[in-house]
Amino acid sequence: MSDGPLDMRMDQTIRATAADLVNHTDEKTLADLIFQLGEERRARKIARAIVRARPLRSTLHLADVVERAVPRTGRLHPATKTFMALRMAVNEEPKELDRLLEIGCGWGTLAIEAAQRGAKVVGLTLSAEQKSWADAKIAEAKLSDRIEIRLQDYREICEQFDAVASVEMVEAVGQRWWPAYLDSIARNLKPGGRAAIQLISIDARIFDGYSRNPDFIQAYIFPGGMLIDEPRFERLTRERGLSWQDRESFRLDYAETLKQWRERYDAAVRGGRLPGFGERFHNLWRYYLMYCEGGFRGSGVDVIQVTMVKA
Image (cartoon, rainbow, N blue to C red; front, side, top):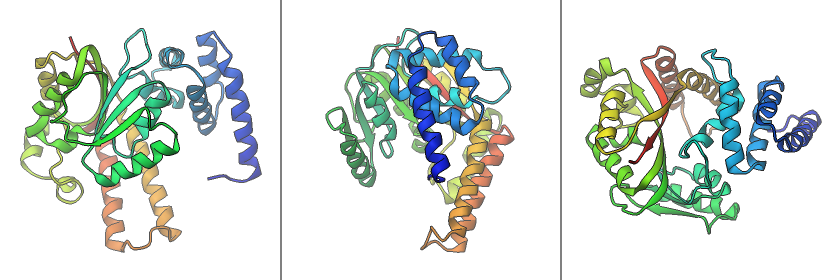
């Protein structure tokens, strides 16, 4: 949402700055310039503008340079967070993706971002509403020739892809189906292909008790959902000829995201922008957001990105 003339002037400055930065060939210099931007909102906007303007290979290399330059403070620099997802599903010598399978494509945003960077994407969902929305956004982006959204179960697909992406899908399948989920990844990846997975895990020391006793989220928000026992899941992954590497944890950033979601939700309620939802629902949703934030801040719950490579 624009804040008026000042915000418009800032956006014009961002576009000009991004255009100037894109012309730099020295990646270390470019990374240093990103850090010098100062204010987080502006840094993130410029980082995104650079991502959109640079070739995939160059952007991914820049992401590596930026991350190496980040002081290890326990939190990720905004520019690093912007580039993190782009590093996934490519090897250390990045190349243009050919076919990408997204298991659990949601509303289509990741598919659109990948297609804009050269990938041909097949996205899977079981929701007719998600498919309809995603198809419309894809057509609006003029990418219908590069993205196919299918109403298809991940257990049914058997094709060959250069890469697989799946963001917080595995928590929805339940522990019983972890092997089938990983079988699908292994089956659909070409040899040497890479899968980029984002998942939410729970401390393995309490997993057995958690899995036997549905918690608040399982009872009220995601029936049938199950957070991941990471050591057990990693073992199942390796048993299928997939590596487990480049693990990234960012639970504190997720906690901050949840806090901001709650603040924005409260502002929307106060502003009357959520008609049709009563106080009981609002209290339930606030509790859900606070419940999750507490889990991430307390370290009992983590969110990670991991790369799996098929032998």
